[in-house]
Length: 427
Ligand SMILES: NC(=O)c1ccc[n+]([C@@H]2O[C@H](COP(=O)([O-])OP(=O)(O)OC[C@H]3O[C@@H](n4cnc5c(N)ncnc54)[C@H](O)[C@@H]3O)[C@@H](O)[C@H]2O)c1
Image 1 (spheres, rainbow, N blue to C red):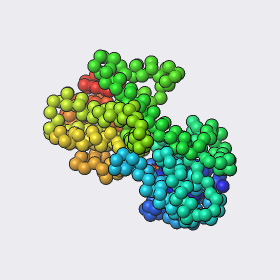
Image 2: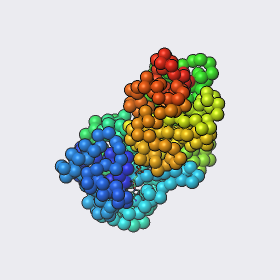
Image 3: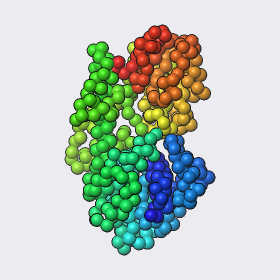
Image 4: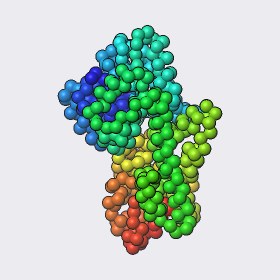
């Protein structure tokens, strides 16, 4: 099938590469010249495991190309995916300006009965908005579909090719059948529904996942006070098949490009319709407190943080991505600076992105450089590299052997036997 994907970010580029790999002819579009220039040279502008290889293979096979010319891509494709960003607006709502721009451009260029598929995460009602915008420019027949994406950065290709489910919201059978044809090679469960329900499924899923994490984080706070171990508690809870063990890992808060803005947008949409969503609001509130927990623990241990050197390991919002959006590391580092601490940080891949956001901290060339003379280590992102760290060496180079393990990846007994003071989250 001839497919256009508008927006070559984490979702659009992965979707485009995977659709090409499945044998479709894909044109990826972006308004960002730098991204398109890089992609034309076969280089991915984002870090995502396996993506470079997949792009390379499909560029060579002539199945994927890149352009800034949206109109041309629309004209040459039968199905047009919208995968542009939907960032947080000023009042917590989803800012739809990129979707609106894309819909206008598609409408102006449309030249036949094609499918316009919304893959961006958008509030309920956006499908209708896209229909209206396109219809203003194009008087022929066309189909709008909602097909939210559930991939996770860092495992995006695998998630895209082996999804738990594919959600397709459409107004008519014809559009559903085309979508089914596109996704058939994946052999995954496809849920067909209406556009509005599909739009809400995405927000409901993300809010539920964020709530699960916030819930276990709150239990971890209690564990800290009663000498219980949150990992054991979470395992015992998760073994109940009605609950499941995923997303019950306590830590120093959730972040990223999706959960924070999607929870906010869902709350905002509900409010617009007179519904107060108390649970997502509480999940958000609990997360704010959780992000600053490592700083609170440091203050309890070191008393004043003024002039202390704190080494922050891990900056991206989770491992295997360079995405810094809403990363807990940002709030932690800024809070440390505010307390007068000197912050030295290291991340295996997110330093370039982090430098754009974090000011006033030192970016080290290795974990050991960050830890040289440090009064404490704060582990914020659980990169594998940090699991394999040489503790004997760290013990020698740190000024004060204190570890605040924000992701519960270390073994307290082992660290204490080496001579570290250790504190996890709910451990
Ligand atoms: N990142 C994730 O893990 C993830 C997962 C599921 C869903 N989503 C959702 O998918 C959507 C895209 O997310 P992302 O992380 O890929 O965003 P991103 O910011 O990485 O990429 C969006 C891209 O769209 C481009 N763009 C904006 N307006 C455009 C236009 N009019 N024409 C062409 N290109 C345009 C931007 O230049 C950018 O490259 C969002 O709604 C997001 O919530 C993201």
